[in-house]
Every structure is written in C-alpha cells, then in structure tokens.
Length: 213
Picture 1 (tube, one colour):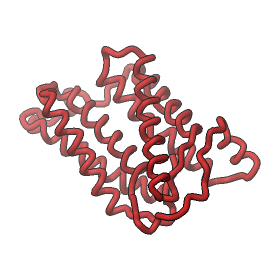
Picture 2 (cartoon, rainbow, N blue to C red; picture 1 turned 30 degrees about the vertical axis):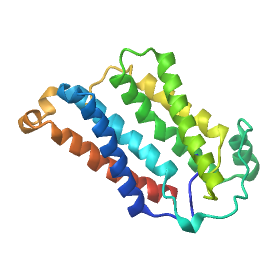
Picture 3 (cartoon, rainbow, N blue to C red; picture 1 turned 180 degrees about the vertical axis):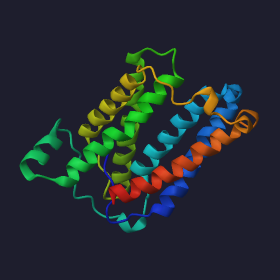
Picture 4 (cartoon, one colour; picture 1 turned 180 degrees about the horizontal axis):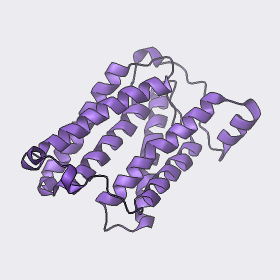
C-alpha cells in the first residue's frame, strides 16, 4: 500500500479514522454483540481500532493537492521491494515494508480472538481480502486522479504475512486483560472499553502519520 508524502494531513486523517471507528461500532450495535463479556468486548474494540487505523493510513487523505497524472504504474511483480531495497538501498521502501507488516499483526491477533469459530485458512483469506480491498481502492483512487495511489502486489504479500504473524501470536498462552486488572466501574460501564479503543485509534493514527511522513 502506498502513502502520500506530499499531502500529509494528520488532523484530517484522524477525523476520518474516528468516522471509520464509529461506523464499525454502528455495525457492532446492529448485530447486538454489545452483550459480550468484558474480555471479548475488549478484543472487538481492539480489532475495530486497528482496522480503522489500517484504513485511515492507507486510503486517506484524499487531497485535491495530490490530484494529477499518475506517473507510477501498478506493481504486478512479486518481491520487487526486495530488489529495490538491495539494489537501491531504499530506506523508504524498507520502512514502508516493515510498516505494512506491523499494520496487520494486531489485525491478525485480534481477528483470531474475535473469530474463534473460523479456521486459520479462512482467517488468512479474510486478511487477503481486506488487503485486496485496500489495494483495489487505491487503484480506483489512482484512476480518479489521486496520483500517489497505486496497486502493489508486494503489499498484498506483506499484509498477509503480518496477519499470519498475528495469528501465530494469538496461540501464545498469555492474557492481555486479566480480571483483576479491570476496575469495577469498567465492568459496570463497558462502553468505557469502546471509548478506550477510540482514543487508542486516534493516538495510533497520529503516530502512524508521523512515522510515515
């Protein structure tokens, strides 16, 4: 997935991230899964948080200042990023590759925690479909004139790799949230967990913008 380096707008991106997060929670409410226990509600909040971060950092901002003729062709060559890193010693390519892997690790981890009934193969397909949605949307943005968006098959690979790493980490027997760590007022008002996910999403979008740009 490609990012805009000349049209960074952290405040705008944080706003879009909030809208994405709220939209996901509207779906959560419609499906009436608000009755989940504290632990699973936390998992859902984290999955929504990192999904919103991924969409926000890869698809926004859509700035009018970035519009123009796209001089970058879609990358349909597998492992091209390795050639660029080794041949041209491109720090920017290496940074974006690592970032794209890290972006999907929490999605893979919390995806496994939330969708326990799905086997690993189906989860990996979900990671691939999510990454393909991002890349296809970027290709559409490129076609519409947003010149910094291109389709990249390498991004599909590293995104899925990140999801698989998160999937593997989900099998490690440790607890992120222990019962004794949850204050009584959180148990009484579990919406605090949802708000925590929203705040974390804002922080991650802010940090992600500064890392990328």
